[in-house]
Amino acid sequence: MATVRETTYDLLRSLGMTTVFGNPGSTEEPFLQDFPADFHYVLALQEASAVGIADGYAQATGRPAHVNLHTAPGAGNGMGNLVTAWHNKTPLIVTAGQQTREMLLLEPRLTNRRAAELAQPYVKWAYEPVRAQDIPGALLRAYATAVQPPTGPVFLSLPLDDWAQPADPPPPPRSVATRYAPDPEQLRRFADVLAASRAPALVFGAAVDRAGGWPGAVTLAERLAAPVWSAPAPERTGFPEDHPHFRGVLPYAIGPLADALRGHDTVLVVGAPVFRYYPYVPGDYLPDGARLLHVTDDPDEAARAPVGDTLLTDPALGLAALADLLPATDRTPPDARPDPAPPEVTTPLSPEALFAALARHWPADGVLVTETPSNLPALRRQLRITRPASYFTMASGGLGYGLPAAVGVALAERDTGRGRPVVAVIGDGSFHYSVQALWTAARLRLPLVIVVPVNQQYAILKAFAELKETPGVPGLDLPGLDITSVAHGYGCATEVVETPDQLGAALTAGLRADGPTVLPVPITTDPPRIL
Image (cartoon, rainbow, N blue to C red; front, top):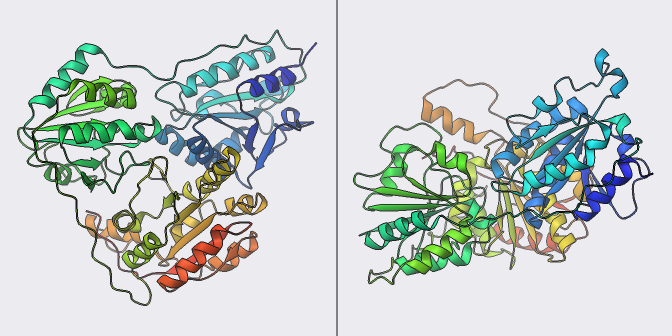
């Protein structure tokens, strides 16, 4: 008779989930014993890195990833990036060991006291099976929950003595639909409003990219001859940023965002919250006389929107259906926005000069993973994303995601055979949150290039302190961090970059290397403007 462990591994094979991300603990060893030769265990040195690597891998492959954590402490270590996975809507199957059932009443060491509650509210479903035989069925339910819209992480707590128990017959295979089409009546109402609009504006978010909706977004923008903005603080890009209709990224504060949309009578938001705000700058949610239409696959996102009418649907299906219903317009298309002026090259480089150089040397079909909050506006101005699935960052605002996510994206590019070059831009403050991910990148020999703007401070917090008029905040300077030595210690190549030409040569060499390359770049230290 098959064991629970054997049945579970067979189920994972059938789901195409033969890569496991984790850091093994004693409560996980009964699951991991005699690890199958057809599975790949991706070792991270800390659980936050394991979750972040899995998140990047799942997003880049478009398939769920399995993360195996160590009972309560390990799950706790991974919680920051689990929060980010929730906001990123990344389908992760997170399993964690639990103490043996015979001792749970005693709450021995490494017991997860309230296992199903620990990960909430940042998972779609959390469960500890009542019987060992329920593990395969629970895993199948977890998979179905994670991949249905809105996608997201799930959590299972699995007692260590369950794996050797005899299994019930395996759950029968079944398929789960992961997309749904719009309500025809609401769709027609939206189309009628847009057709009658004097000056419509389009706002696209990350879910357009997740759904493969770029072609529909372009078709709709051109059919309406409408300008296009990116939703505030997007974790992915939903529209080609070299398209003449693209205007940039909306500010993420209430009043300034409404000001940016002034002059438009209809605002169509697709695949994004309405809206992601911070800091609080009061004002009207919309310009006077404007109406908002919201297309989303997330009922919770629809319910919490402060204004607007909602259409629930897969964003790509919704875009295509709207375009089919809309007649051609006689409006004049918007003029293309001008290219940014060439920044002055100084020593040290300004963020604008650094990212202008990065844009000049950007690899064809490159993928950008970023976590540099103070420099993000400059990066987005200078480097335009022109292809789908080419930009990844954290929707949560929490640090420690970008570096491991870049490792996961680079691994996905290798495993899928696409081989797209991956470049991460990680601030020197962010770099140290999940720095252990460098070791995983080195062990996997991934040709990942990590550009680290070095300003020796939490510059974004200095900017917030100025905005909020809170002087004297401690702990905002970061002197004495030797990024070069740290990178060497984890097995990475490294070179301090000080000029645009040096960046180009180092970037080219790093993408051809047999392992990761870390490029610290000293930059100017002026705090940025938040808005």
